[in-house]
Image 1 (spheres, helix red, strand yellow):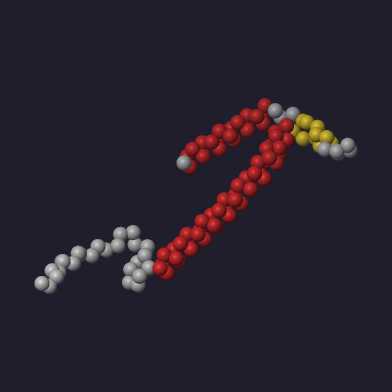
Image 2 (cartoon, helix red, strand yellow):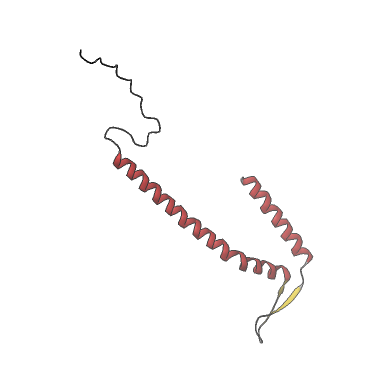
Amino acid sequence: MNIIRTIIWVVVAIALLIFTLNNWSPVEVKIWEDIVLETKKPVLVIISFLAGFLPVWLLHRGTRWQLRRRITSLETAVKNAVTANAPKGEDPLDPAPEKTEPQPEQKAPE
């Protein structure tokens, strides 16, 4: 999976480099009536991309962090509950408990 991610980032970087080389021209951006910013097209595109991408990415990371904490908390609660309810001498988290040999049937006295 890491190789695919690396290939995608290399392709994106090459595309950005080609775009930058072909569009290196000045652009005037009017922010307010008296504020005019003169910048290059690639800088404007990258800043615009980051202004849209970063808030959504930060929201995603925060939600992911919160859900991981909740999952860890629930797993710990389940583990503690299973351990507390287990009979003494047995490992409650052992996936294959030891098999006991069946006791021979005793005949009822006549």
